[in-house]
Image (cartoon, rainbow over all chains, first blue to last red; front, side):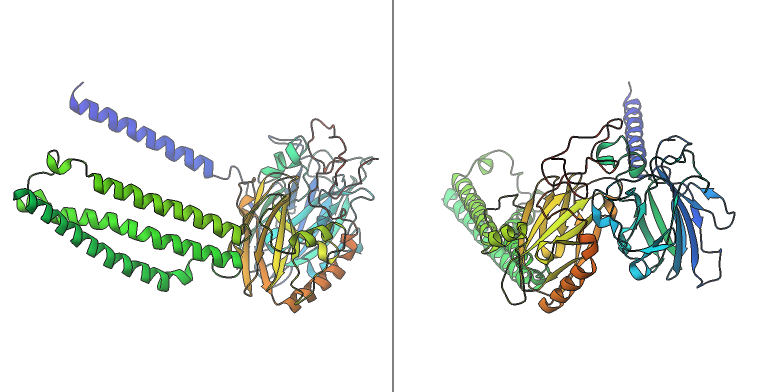
Length: 227
Length: 330
């Protein structure tokens, strides 16, 4: 092979290697399929409280992982339940959250998450009754939590009876057994704040933190707080 | 005669290089010590931070002359023995390339002394500073006075701490995917998402995990200890200054590892006492639901919040403390 041919071959292989490295790094760094963003900033006048309605289900029932546990949110514009866990919220605004909890519960791994923290008044309501601490060793236990670590916000989602008819395909209708919890918190300044469940509810995975607990758009996401 | 001149020239070169090296090294060391040193991380918020800042500065004082020595030699050689400039023959091969036993012995001796001295210096620093803020495992050998007593008292609910008492304050760091929480056995064993510490106090961090391996890194405190499940990793420091610090997980631990951080505060002893008492009271209802204070915990095996879920079966009950669950069956 001529010198020019050799150089061209070496250059070609070099470019292929660089391309593979760039592709590998980009693939590794990409967050997978984060889903879309639900915009809650336009559903009300500026400065007014925002209503965020979400539901937690024991199994999403559809898609690539139908058995995985998940959160869903109600789109404020269309009123439809959407399987997206990145929510755009206005900064420095009171967010009134309503959670429809359709999953069963159990004792918490860390009872610290049985305490309501970071909400306005450090309280929440469970089916209309105020509470600030829930003992997960009693009753139906706790199914999930809704927590934003950077805001020190954490609210336990009390489980429904495991003997009840549990919803298996989301979105779940209110005819299925569920608990309704409400609480309010105030968003901070602009930024991306991750939220997650602190109950290791990834069934079938080591320590329960795999599957839906380790994949965006199931048991965690972001509060995309904007001006 | 020619050989004598050659030797004389070599001596002159060595003298010139040495003079340049001494002047530059002295200037660099003085500049670093007075200008950069006080700003070297991790600062001076704790005894371990201050000690590590000093150690880092001290090591740089040794490293700079070595670095400058290499640079001076290279620079001098390029300027003085450049073949292009003075048509001096290439110094490759021949007499000039032969080994110089004196230079070799000097180099090996000096570098050996420096390395051995630094090894000794590092060892003494670790011992004198009670582990330099690093995790020493469950049985620390370099513990400060009063630490063993305070930690033994913590397990029997007899621990106490009050301002100006010079008592060691044990704080338990509990890592879990993906957040750190903190238990204060001295104040009824309450658990909090906040890490507040009193100034002027020896703190014993007892670090453990409820699931996978994490690492507790309080950067400004210069404290770093791995958080392993069912292991109590102990690290010590003395708080010296008021201020805020950052806690990060420094062990890649899953999806939200990047979000596993929080901010702590070193406050006055009276402020700490007020905070601790207020939080103990406010959290009392939840503290009653926590397991008895222990240095390590195992994940619950009683249900969906349990450890491993191989197709719905549960792991056996453990005889040690089970965190946040029904107590083990007798």
